[in-house]
Length: 193
Image (cartoon, rainbow, N blue to C red; front, side, top):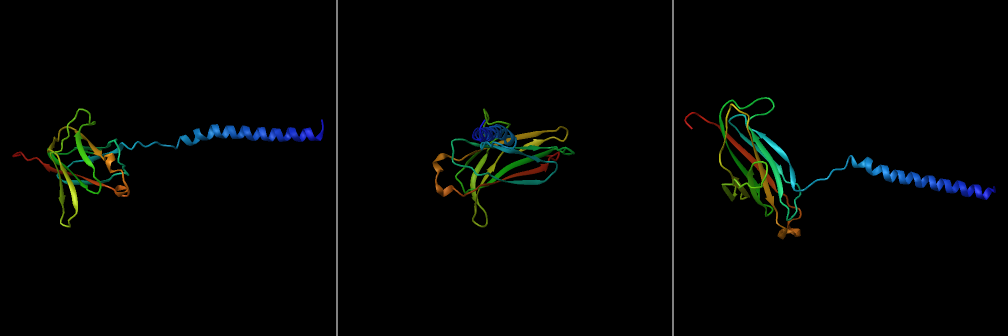
């Protein structure tokens, strides 16, 4: 064998070796990184739990993620319970659930009691835009009074349906965000109630 053929064979083996390594890396690397990849569905938002254990007012503010005008509706799940891991309410309670939102984006809201919106009717009893002392506009959404007994664990599940129609798909709404405040006003039920 000549020296020229040996150089060709070594060069061919190096190229073949590099191609094999490249193919192996292309095959192995996506599966290695896929363990760390996540997909986010914009229509479902992580659920929140609110615990009503005593006569109190609880307020939880939620910042909506970047929502875009779409035919899809955004769902926000939350629940109100009369117990947590440590204890349960010691008296019968009633609570009023209200939702206050900013009015930066032309969004419509519906609220459903239960774990789905299918075959349910919105429980909103009042939905109006009001102004505070500073002249800031807010949307106030109110619902019927709910009741908890002290002798059983109970959780009421809610789904807030948020609609941002595609008709608002222009730059005017590009950098705006919406804040939502869920407020639970609970009161002890006295025997005369």
